[in-house]
Length: 299
Image (cartoon, rainbow, N blue to C red):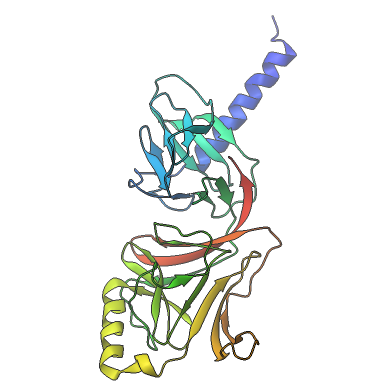
């Protein structure tokens, strides 16, 4: 007896979904605790059952029953996926097509959200305001080999004492938002930190990724040279359309006139979008800065 057309179509769709997610699933390992984002191109970017993304008191947890639950700073549930609600081995990740996936240990999807987009690098981020969003594909990126020798000055500092006029302080220190300005003077400072890498705004008002020991060495060299008193004031800014730009202060605010800044460096790639982020990631062999436009809001 021939199968009913409806059942045949259902079987075809299930088979298609299996192959789509199986071939987009790569070798993955467990994400460290107290992180805020998942990245499609990093092997370390998954949540296992009981793992969470945490940012500014909000948490996204993959529960034992494979349900994703988002809680606010008061531990109140504000969203859940209702994905599986049965005890099987599962993981949560974002694939190379910008689709968030809860899958079993064989890579078969149990729950998904979002429409497939062009293959690329995507990020899933729990923001400081508690919103859960997908960004990508990446507009632009650059890498630096670990502890490579760089040119120019630069050096230490922390994220918290260099970031001003920011509405979205991120405790992880490796995400830059398009609502952030980083202004410092008169010496170089660290903008973002992740693993063994630091994104540094040099005293030449340009950007560079340094390995840990290189950043420390550059800072010590600057102290010996006494450059703190002579270096210009610099600013780094990420626009909502995804361009990362560095500026040098030409004329400070005076007589009711605003500061005058000279553009000294820019990533030069943009996309019309309401919001963008930049992320510094540690891939083990290199540090990489990627810029992502917003794709969609999950919760």
